[in-house]
Image 1 (tube, one colour):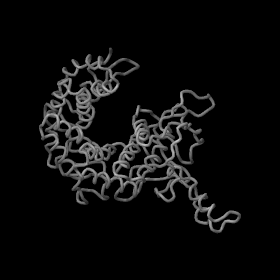
Image 2 (cartoon, one colour):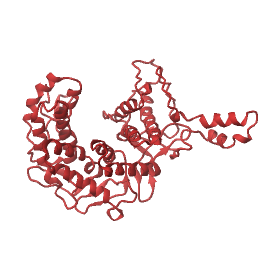
Image 3 (spheres, one colour):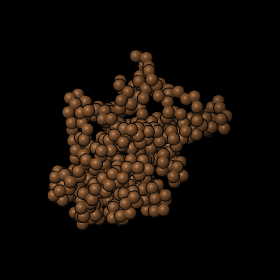
Image 4 (cartoon, helix red, strand yellow):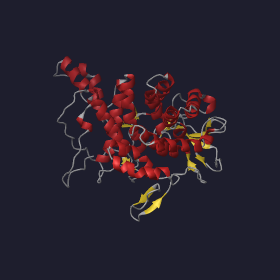
Length: 424
């Protein structure tokens, strides 16, 4: 009614907003949702709007956003509709052709911003999330168009990341810093993050491996190197709880920030898929622990909504041997032989099994969410208190449920007493 053909509608004023080129981002990004929900009539009604899009725009557009929102949306809908709408593939290739010159750099890494008409960029910078999040779309486009150039451009980026070393600014294998100079082919900083500006690059390694059905070991190797280094250097635990944190990490000075953002909450879903793909049980433990944190940040607020980022203290490096155990439990676990009044065997079993809920594979079909523990652990607080409609936590919950079958991840509470804390 108010914003058809535009990227967004402002719900308070019904005015339009075009942060993604003005090509109808909400519409195109929602095409695959229409298909999944069986809204075929709605889909047929909006197809004429797709044909109106002109990607030859004399403005600077984000290469990354254009690929994930438009190219991804068009290709997903094309596949889900069994190629019933050829215009979707046609427009996908038109967009790719408009963006392709942005990849013609000395390093093969695309610019952050690109003007499709002037064929120029305002600067020579980009981000690891942006160069690492084009592969799926370009590989699929090559598959459907039988034009290998798109997959070749994507593969060149992957090869550059695979060969990056110390001289390129990489300090730890698998932990790619954020900022990149596309002309020099070098990282400009030392901070690695699985949150904003880093996130999807690591996710795409795994999904590329799955898309290629394991036929390209390089993709799996890049993913596993990143996850192994992340768990060794970046992952933090809160003693005595199941809460895990994944803050940005300075790979040069080996120091971690004390913040985590909501974008990082895609990691539990990624790790759960990776755990099953590569048979890595500890990755599933970490997935569950990180998801506990993300869900807790919803359940412990007055609105039941999560803040954009949060701060934590009193943490320590992740250790599979001590994770989720309190200081008292750890002491008792070591000193069980000297305890009086219990048999040695019973005491050992008690202390070795307590506090290890993440090791239990038993699924209770009648699961009910326990009350959320308030107040929050000391030092855990919201920083940016905005809620930006982030889907990452819900995505991870859905994947954890599908992978584990545990109804814990399926339970929702429709109502609660006024004096009870809200449930997610």
